[in-house]
Length: 325
Image 1 (cartoon, rainbow, N blue to C red):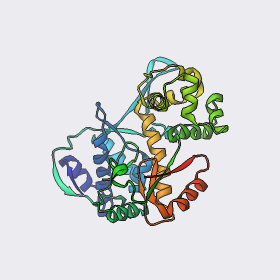
Image 2 (image 1 turned 90 degrees about the vertical axis):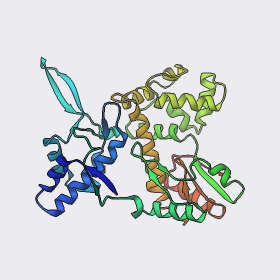
Image 3 (image 1 turned 30 degrees about the vertical axis):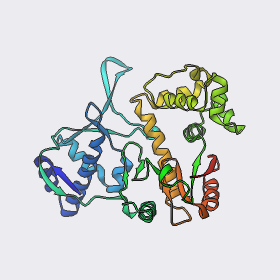
Image 4 (image 1 turned 180 degrees about the vertical axis):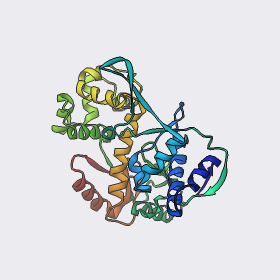
């Protein structure tokens, strides 16, 4: 792929000890260059250590050089020293547990420099990519497949219009009921954070949105879905504050996820969802045709029972359902 490399960055890369290390330096710069597309208004973008490690297991050496030479800087937390009120403690701002990755900012202008080809990792070496690509071609579509940096969601030409294009043509959708509410329950269980009202919903196999409609006197399921989305993804506003009293511990958990940036909560849930549906279910699916739509899979009619059983066995906490298109 083609990227722009500023003169200062190129000089640093060429100064690395050998050709192998120089190639690694260019790949690490490319990773930062691509992540910069998702920068916030302050110029910071997330770049997880796990992401860099997949590119080069010794990425820390190259990142240290970029930091030292003023190519990038990382976001810091500033806290008052409890033992000295006149002193400020500076710490790196990240939390692996909450998938709040390190945030970096370029200190050089990456729009000016030399255009170069970078031999960068792509998704084509994964089975999920191969299955999706072949499935799109079978349906007459170009395999234009992208994956975002925000939550690693996958995008392709059928995302927006699959319901009309594939209607009555022998395809079924397998998805999870109340996917994000269930993921929240699973994450809280993993961290041993219990909210009695919230947990009772799933422990008694109650449909989450029906419960929300009943307890908060909401108009319908759509209103319940909108309220949950506000609670999970907004910067603090919700149209019905009763949800905070109904789920106090869950509300505290979500608030902690948003402590630095309210978008971190949405990013985390998209990431968890993508890990399940793309990196696991689609990657290992027992068929040669499948198309992901975020928290669901489109499969052929003859494969629906096979794939449904496969999903249920792998993720018993999720409640899967099948629907004909």
